[in-house]
Amino acid sequence: MTTPVVRRLLVDLRTPLPRRWNGGDAFRTALFNALSMSFPAGEQFFIDSVRLGIGTLDAGQREAWAAEVQGFIGQEATHRRIHELFNEHLSRQGLVNHWAPRIVRRARHLDGKDPRAWLAVTAATEHFTAILAEYLLKTDAPLAGCEPRLRDLWLWHASEESEHRCTAFDLYRALGGNERWRRRLFLVVSLHFATDLMRQTANNLWHDGAWWRASTWASAWRTVFGRQGLVRECLGPWRRYLAHDFHPSQGDGAPGARWLAAHGDLAVPVKSA
Image 1: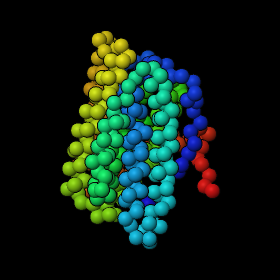
Image 2: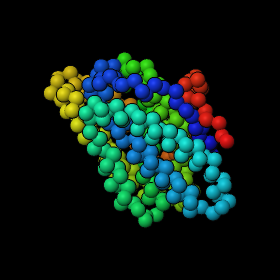
Image 3: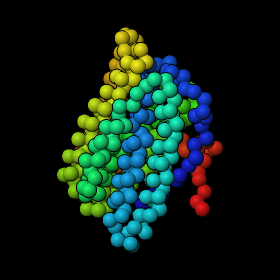
């Protein structure tokens, strides 16, 4: 087991965001804005999932898991708060968050269900965030020209996602979750995640006024299908989840660890009471 470190991010989120903060690129900005819109509701779902899961363990098992779960929840709660602040700027720019309500509605369908179902959905979604984190930390293209304070925000979030990528998966297994449902729910989550990301990105572009511009769709092609695009870089790691011997630790957490070690003055560990 690992114990994720809860940190305080010292990034200015009072200053308004430029409308196209990601290198002046309308598509890349709309895509990352869409991801941010999903995070507060998504992070709360993750927190609720691990709380449900650890609550089903006996006292001895809960004690063994307590530090890791506390660190996981602390990190996710911090991500939720930071992206709530980020999303307030998006709302003031006239963007409308349609993704978060869908997350909340789907979560209601799991009310009263086996905690392993919650954890399987969380582990699947955490795999998405982990492979996106790996992509951001290894590839310059997604944040090329990004305002430095916002680049720091995204790389901090990516690094911490790498740090706690095993928690929900390991807890699912500790509760006896089986491989068949792990892979089946991953495919469901994959469909929802991809379609929701596309829908919210498109809606953001519509509100931005960039929908009809050729440059928007040229950037979309490069970002999604280009040499350093999402499909080329992330499809292989996505497939890994379907292997019988998959474990999140097979991903490369070293870039995130290096980023956190190099930015200790920006992402400051919170001291335990």
